[in-house]
Amino acid sequence: MTKVLIASNNPGKIKEFKTLLADFGVEVFSLKDMDIHTDVPETGTTFRENAALKAETLAHQTGMITLADDSGLCVDALDGEPGIFSARYAGLDKNSEKNIDLLLSKLADVSEEERKAHFVCVLALSLPNQPTHFAEGRCDGRVTKERHGASGFGYDPIFLIPEKQLTFAQMGEEEKNKMSHRARALRVLQEKWTSWVGERS
Image (tube, rainbow, N blue to C red; front, side, top):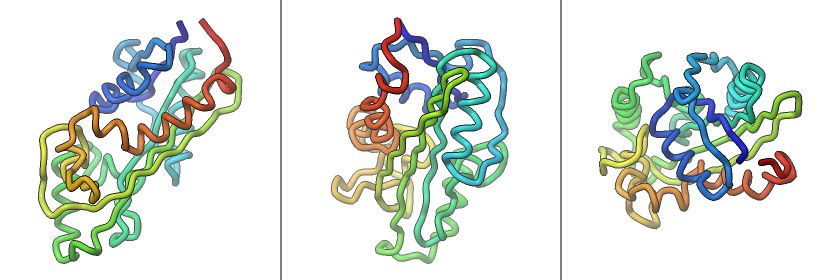
């Protein structure tokens, strides 16, 4: 079975990846599973650059097929903030509650109609000594004025899908994984998997 390393230390993200990759016929490993403590600096200026930095660094270090993502929330009224700084919006400690508090404070005087936002996910798939491949996904929604729901992670409690009238945190894992930015990027990856990775065992 093909072994794939997920270049992340985010427990919520790892859980999501393992669920979404379940049908790929691969064995998924996190950095923790492999006892890897590398923290790749996200010095890129785009989601794509940051995803590539993480995937390529870990693929070179481990010799494993490595999948990395860079994802974030982009709010129209804030000119795309927090964007690539989503995880560390309120500080380098990457505290989700503080991030949400800061975002809500910046949107305090913004009307419901003007709170449009979208999640972006860029996946970078790096194979040792081969070109890096990319898959992208996007999910449109709106930022709520307060938290709703207890599932998910990150900004999920304040990201509303208007047609469902539910935040990601209210949906639960199964429903979220049908429409999330990460799920959409992984569907693109699945379509290209054999041509990019080949038949491996």
